[in-house]
Image (cartoon, rainbow, N blue to C red; front, side):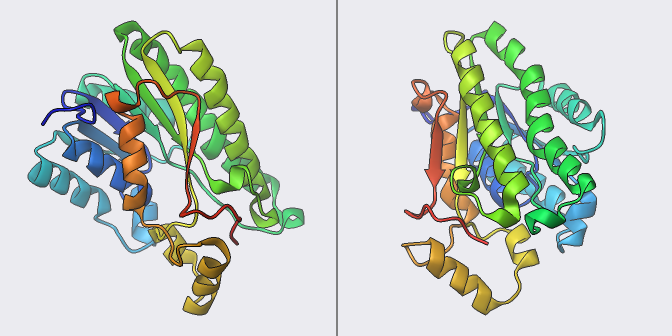
Length: 265
């Protein structure tokens, strides 16, 4: 494999990646040559009906793409877990060249009903975790003169709905962090970007879907293409931003929304 989209010899760590968008991105990196470690939480995988998701990822990455692949268990919302997971990824891979901060949590609630506990959980997962990962990953990337950081944002960061007010605000804060840090590391060979999906057909969205009629109505409101996106629809932009092909792109946000910019609920 060759070309500017080739990530052979690179080591990638993708959080929240046993299923959905994270899994699709991690497999794409493996397909294009990277060794990959994913973080996952077994309890949540089991809750949504995929108890063997992490093992299935490792098997596919190894058998289909010939990658060195590892699954790292850990609930990143627990104190100390995020740095432990990152350090275990470094131990497995040797280093981390590509960091994809994908793990997040949404708690849809009327704004007035959001509890302090729900606020704190979303703040930990959607803002503190990316900060800690970036603090750990960026200095060694800069020392080596090459690195790619991709945070997963949301269409909500620019077009929020009230039921996801806390989540949307934190995604906006994350993008602000991306812009800020990209300026600091711009001459180091490290790029830092944000990828924002619209309505995507993921296990999480299927798990909490009320019924097919509501799902179709959501699609009609938000997607000019007439369909929800698939996790694989994010992978082209992700590979661009994680490879040499994206070496002149930093501090930016890329929307993958099927042409729609309306929020969904």
